[in-house]
Image 1 (tube, rainbow, N blue to C red):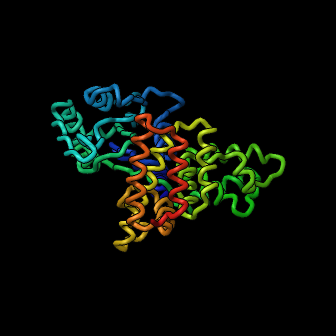
Image 2: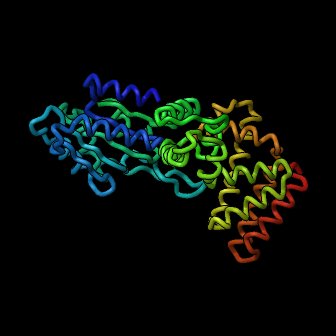
Image 3: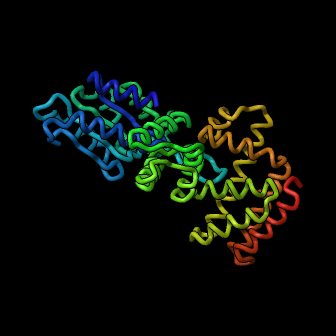
Length: 352
């Protein structure tokens, strides 16, 4: 939250950089930050000095041309480039293949953009806004850092999210029953965008009672697929076979594609295998989160879940899942019978 507060304080003081890169997974705050800059540059309700550019269709030359335009009857001009492709990491040739070499900037026309970043116009605020992962080693990223500021919009910590939601509840005249906030954060996850939508539903639903309870959260906020998968794997690890199979049936009833469910179960065990290895090396949850690029809360939950499995069993489980995947995709087995057999076998002896 500090990065966002710092930006707002800079706006209040009128101290702004000529170039910004907004990136990171917290999309709600990224859009809020871009919106605050738009409000700052909007004079008398006019949008003459605001240019919103689609980075997926506009070229570097178009962006520079807009950035080099002087403001009209105002001190500042704002150029916001949404989804610019210039900061993405190079794609890999295959799962284990070599990284494809990045094309030279000149070959993609980025040289004109790099030249602009060497001496950006002081009357323009150029903002690149992307939710895609960025490669901090790239020359254009370093050029933005040198000319202005790159802001990483990470997910807020759980305590920060809890404070924000408690403040919103108080402002709306609602009380939060015990465990209601924890239930909501466990169900929805750390995304402020999703939390905002679900919390507004809870505020409307509790207009008469004035109290948000855990039951309200469970009734109105269905778990995301990742949480359902986590619950299934947790049930398997604790030998609650019926609960695991019920979870699969619930997702099928909710029209989740079978192959997507299978892919998510495989992903969960892959993560468990990676986390188990790091735990064995003595890595704390925070370091695990950094290495695997996940939220610390997710890393903490995975670390706890690892206690149900040995490293050897996770390897065998992962290999079994690959066999199930091949059997289902080639038509050798139907999805549910194959997954049912897989889960029954694990529940019988999850450490074997």
